[in-house]
Image (tube, rainbow, N blue to C red; front, side, top):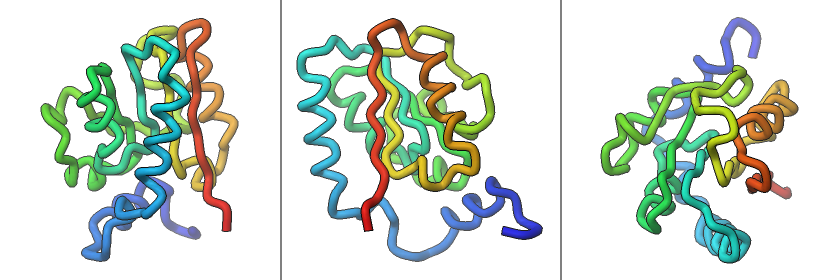
Length: 145
């Protein structure tokens, strides 16, 4: 990535007219596994880190969760079909601490297929730890190829 910042790379990535990465066939499975994991937990506030166009944010909001999405690329958020996207989506890198949420205010932080893109993945966990209430959950996935 010589000469290009990570933010610039993902702005360009999301502006392409290629098939959306959101058409990933494993997305429904990830959502089902997440629902199973949080079934016994009272999740009222959540943050989806690396939210892309906000599909998970919309799915969580549809289940009554106060869900917010955060992505490094404004171009990703421009594709959002989330109700009230200005209130639910924010441009911010997972690696830039602190995150734009109140410390200790979240019940759930998700990061699906994000960690493998980070140059400093520890920042993802540090940000989640600061944002979560005691007993809050982190749900993250990474591809297995």
